[in-house]
Image (cartoon, rainbow, N blue to C red; front, side, top):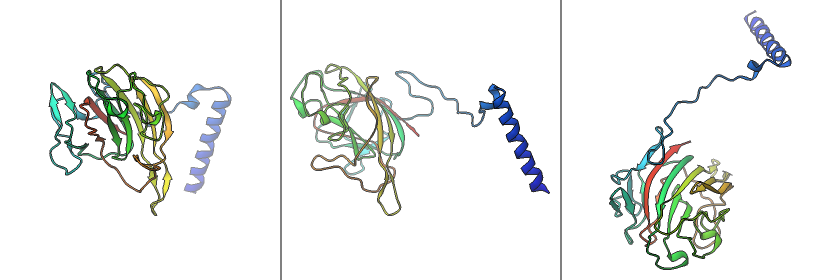
Length: 245
């Protein structure tokens, strides 16, 4: 009897909803739950209230050396983080999967070198997938290795670089790859990138981890760190924050 009463109730509700839709009732398509959480959106100097601040200019407490897990050897001065050549890559203590990442970077105002030797660094999502940092203002290099590229995989839609010495920004939406229990790929990583508020990667698929030589491929892994590259050039960073998705 209870089941019959429940079935009749559901049927009546469905008929009522159908009738409301047929009569053009706008309430029929209103969805009230769940309610999105309220956050403070932040601004150019302040991260959103639900973000994890990875570098606010004060310290490298959120980072370690990628080589040995010890203290990172990069320089922090006047609120700016700068690569110290030879110190090696640094990575976050925390590990992440799907995320929204904001990071600002600046290549040296004094231009030295050319091609890949000019203002080179990189941002590795999950320690494996490199979003290239490079001074590409009037600096020619291979297209899948310039700023805004997923290194040696994906060419940016446009070159949105500012002049050397000027601050630039990346805003990234990253979807981590998924793997089956046997280690094979279930779905590839995907990425959207805005460079200086200009779309340069539009929800594109990565074909595997970043390699300098050879074709990229996937190896099963879980959450990993954000890693910044020491390529020997004194590239600077500031205002780094991340939101888990």
